[in-house]
Image (cartoon, rainbow, N blue to C red; front, side, top):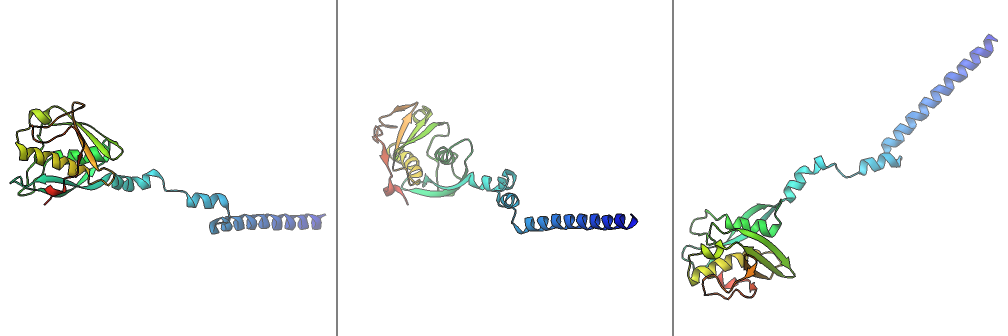
Length: 195
């Protein structure tokens, strides 16, 4: 009886050791990548926390905005980095233009009081709606009008998909800002003004 007990005890110990060994084998094979669940976990996309910096980088865009030189002869491109958050890239870019420039020899032509109400793109045309301060606070003549329109149009047509810009004031088409430039139709890029 004692011998039988000893044999059973030895067999039980061997069985337990084998079971533990098999468990370790499974663990090791999971590390190698044989276990589909573990492999899927390893291949899973990073969590949003890990992606946070990438999303921030995606929320920024380097754009060219155009300002007239102080003589009002040519438009000069200035690179700016804009944040795309609540605003789409077009609105953010125009707001950067309206913020003005501190570049030497350049002037800000859009009246400071003018506010963008909306920017909508349909086909290859951007419809830019300003409040009435665009006209009320505009003090330039024919050259100023050309520079203002050119700075907005050339800034937006830096985006490949935009070929023309229709300026609106309070949601309506305008004839011109001060009687010199026909704004009843969308205006194409004004390359002749670029320095």
